[in-house]
Image (cartoon, rainbow, N blue to C red; front, side, top):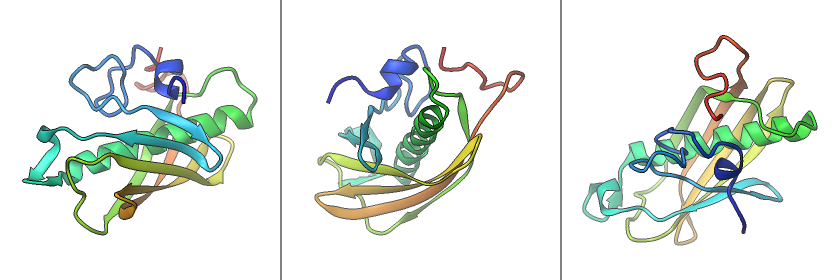
Length: 154
């Protein structure tokens, strides 16, 4: 699959969900696919809410960061830029459809629903063992100089 977009464009990021430089974080690794971005994640024991099931906050972090990167990559591609803009979450929501099992690889797909000049609406789907466990949607916005997140990936 090659290097993920986080390691390619933001190797020094400390974000809990997607920062390659945060050794205590989730360190998600998102890759391009025909639909947008996809990722796989193997949860650890400390990601459980109760024995055998993943915490909803961990699920939310996975989907938020992965959706944010899907927006950043889509905006980069649409503007023919060499690097993605710094994007932030304006709003997002998740729906938990069934308990998400621990001890199995989780898969998240993020797809662009609507792309505008400086923002994107993204839908996310998390599956485990081929079953949809959670879905989400979010609005992710590119920020400009002066915003605290501007160039946070540098």
